[in-house]
Image (cartoon, rainbow, N blue to C red; front, side):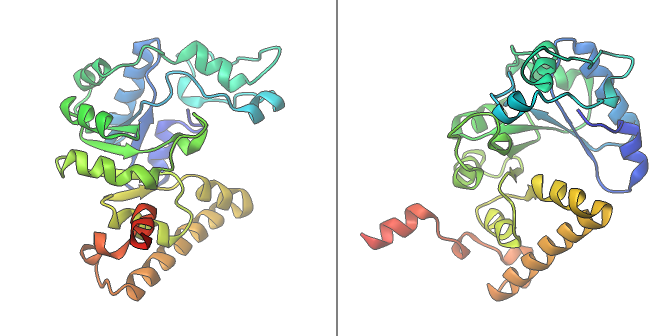
Length: 255
């Protein structure tokens, strides 16, 4: 869904790159994009599983949002969807995304790529166990930036439930709500191997372009290092569950 092609992203940096995808009604589209990612040196596939349908994004509907040019689909499928009312992004998603997505699709995706597969969008112990059974290589605990379903839980509040369910068999990453280095510290203490950053990067980009993005990353890194130092943690391995107290634990301590 990027406005830059896979190949453009690959040529722009030497960082480790993952490809985030949805499963489309036309499976050949998904398959071609995955193959392009493999050829471009991407290291993993991140399958978003919490968008069988696009959530009701009222700001997009009100503003009649027009889908930007999605370059990875050029020559594969038309993205020129301009409904008379409502969101163009929602109209495109409804026409392109496969709402019948199920655990069987992990097996299909595995059949077309040798890259590791992570699933993004899990929030419960039950789904974490199913993901392990399906043979995925990692889980991203995510509520899609809280834009899919109203009242979905904050990811930090369900992270530990997922971590306990997988019991170290596969990595668990956290997505959503990371605004400070202290948030990174809390996620690691609760068992995440890494965090994903969304909105802060976009804010930095909007404010000061590439330099703004670098500034955001530097701020998070510096805040995280300060938090480690003031918590007595010389290394990442020194960050443990004992360094945080959840809301439930705080309430119990008052009883």
